[in-house]
Amino acid sequence: MNEFIKNFANQWDDTEPEVFTPECEFHELEEWGSLIGLAIMNMIAKKYGVKIAPAELKACVTIADVYNLIQSKQ
Image (cartoon, rainbow, N blue to C red; front, top):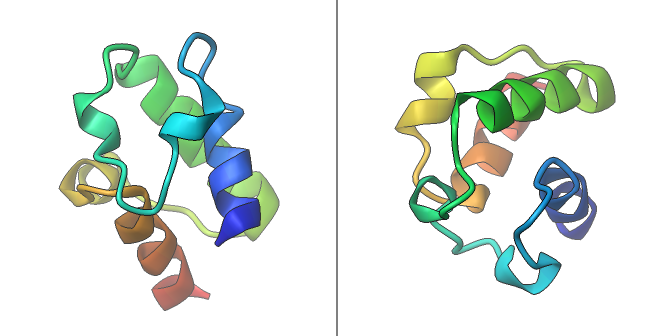
């Protein structure tokens, strides 16, 4: 989980790394937008070999939800 959070946080430019915890509701962050969503989906595909649909990412509330989604597809 810690490695995933670090990879997740690397997709953001202006948000401080300590903001990113398993409980972080990332859609609520000021920097959140469609480009970051695409970057996150691309990172997941490259690093974890899992493809997730935009609707699946949108349905996730926390970073832990995204992590669990990836785990369920591996």
